[in-house]
Image (cartoon, rainbow, N blue to C red; front, side):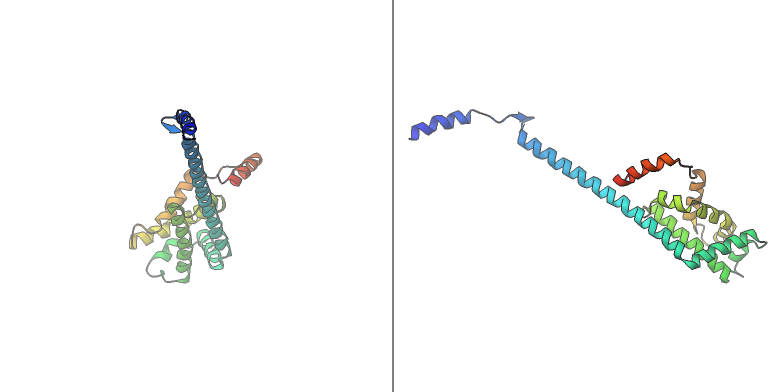
Length: 193
């Protein structure tokens, strides 16, 4: 009985598993599956991050629209700009503590925070730009002299993020979109791109 098993074992020992670059097919199949799983996980993480950035952007937009103090401050800035009063006068020491100056700073601080969020990657710039382009660029134009006086009396970095954002958006303004592009964007948004 011992003799019968020896030839069978010896015969089986002669058959080698096929290999690629010195490794078996099983090794390479397992490696391919693990690599694909890692790639899919990476795509899911990137997609989730994009979605979260867009959600955060929409939240800051909606909260800004509900903020009555911000809306009042923006209307005040438009009124001052269209009136005879120079907005820069509210940045001088004599009027810096006035209600008008506080409202101007409230609006600038809100959009400065939003600009910092965009530059740090917390908010999605395209989402905010689509909704807030005119507000941000007009706010900067209307308050530029105010910002210049504030900088002259303090730090030269005051409101630099909103300035960079507004200037960048002016150089690359929103483009008119065709109706057909909306369908393509819907498909891209479905896949998170």
